Amino acid sequence: MTSPVVIIGTGLAGYNLAREFRKLDAQTPLLLITADDGRSYSKPMLSMGFAKQKDADGLVMAEPGAMAEQLNAEIRTHTRISGIDPGHKRLWIGEEAVEYRELVLAWGAQTVQVPIEGDAGEWVFPINDLEDYARFRAAAVGKQRVLILGAGLIGCEFANDMSVGGFQVDVVAPCEQVMPTLLHPAAAAAVQAGLENLGVRFHLGPVLNRLQQVANGLEAHLSDGSVIACDLVVSAIGLRPRIDLAAAAGLQTNRGVSVDRELRTSHANIFALGDCAEVDGINLLYVMPLMSCARALAQTLAGKPTAVAYGPMPITVKTPACPLVVSPPPQGHEGTWRVEGQGSDLKVLCHGADGNLLSYALTGAAVMEKLALNRLLPPVMA
Ligand SMILES: Cc1cc2nc3c(=O)[nH]c(=O)nc-3n(C[C@H](O)[C@H](O)[C@H](O)COP(=O)(O)OP(=O)(O)OC[C@H]3O[C@@H](n4cnc5c(N)ncnc54)[C@H](O)[C@@H]3O)c2cc1C
Image 1: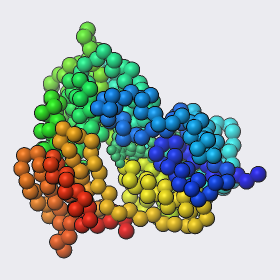
Image 2: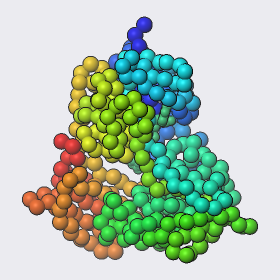
Image 3: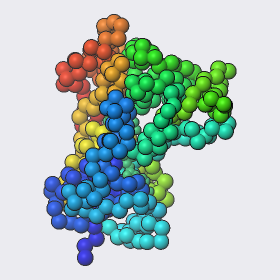
Image 4: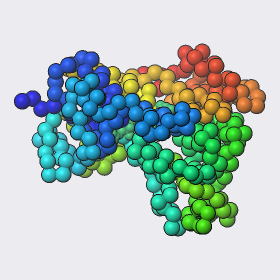
C-alpha cells in the first residue's frame, strides 16, 4: 500500500492545505495528526468571542469526523508526534512508527510563557487555540476584572473584545506604546485612545512581578510598585514557532522551521507551512501567508513543484474601538514616515528613498483607503 501524505496539525494551515490538495488529488491516502481535538475553527475568531457572543463550542465550524469525510482523509486526534526519522520516511508517536510519502509540518507556534511569582499561576491563561479559549471562558464565568499581559496585536484585540464582554480590563506591558513592532507611535496612540474610551486601562512600562490570591480575587504587583486588583489574567506576551522536533530530526531551523519557496525543509520529503514555518527567511504568523503557502504546496504535493509568492499583506486588526489596518514595512526596508489626518482618523505612510509606498497604518475612518493603498504596496515576497 502507498504510504500517505501526512500533515501534522489541524489548524488553518493543516486543514487548508488538505482542502487545496484534495482539489488536485482525490485519491492519494491523506493522514492528518493533531495533538488537539481536531475540531475545525478559525483562530482569529478567538479574539471576537464576546463580540460575536460565542464561546469555544460556538466557534467550532466542523467536527473532526465531518472534516475526515469532507477531505477523504484519516484524522487522528489527541495524538502527539514525538519524533521524526527523515532517513526512513517515518515519524514516531511514542513507540508507534508511521510511514509517510511526504510529511508536512503544520504544527504552529506555542505561547511564550514566563514564570510568575506568587500563588496564583492557575489563574493565568494563555490563549492560542480553542482548548485554551474553552478553559479561559469557563474560568471567566462570574468574574469581572481581567488583566491582560502584553499590548501587542493579540493583547489589544482581547482588550477590545473583553471590554465589549463587560469586563474591566487592565493591560500591562513593558513597552512605551501598543503594538510596538507593528505601529508608528501616532497610530499606536490612536488605537490606545480608542481602547481607553472603552474603559481599558493601560499600564505601559512595568512588568508583572507577582500574582497573589487575596480574599476577593487576585492582586497583581507590578515592577513600578503599583498593585492591580483582578480576577484572572490573560497572557498575550508572544508566540514562538515550534521547532524542537524538527531540530532534533536534523532539519534546518532558525526562528521557525526553515523552508525554501517550495515550502521544502532541508530534507526533500518534508515540508512546512503556517506559524511554524520560516519561508525563505520570513516567518509571518498570519492567515494570508499560510493560505498562499497552502495553494502552492498543494500543487507541489500533487506533482507540480510550485514556489510561493507573497503579495502585499495588510493586517486588519480587530479593535473596532479604533479600526486599524496595517501593512508593516517589508523585511530590511527603511523609509520616511508621514502622518496625515487628526484625532483617531490617521493615515500613516512610509515611503522609500525612491518615493514608492513601502508601508502604511490606517486608523479610524481612514481604513476606507486601504484598497487604494494596497495597489501601491510592494509585494512582501515577489
Ligand atoms: C487570538 C488570535 C487572533 C488572531 N487574529 C488574526 C487575524 O485577525 N488575522 C490573521 O491573519 N491572523 C490572526 N491570528 C494568527 C492566525 O490565527 C495564525 O497565524 C494561524 O491560525 C496559525 O495556524 P497554524 O495552522 O499554523 O497553527 P495552529 O492553529 O496553532 O495549529 C497547530 C496545530 O498543530 C498541532 N500540533 C502541535 N504540535 C503537535 C505535535 N507535536 N503533534 C501533533 N500535532 C501537533 C496542534 O494541535 C494544532 O492542531 C490570530 C491569532 C490569535 C491567537
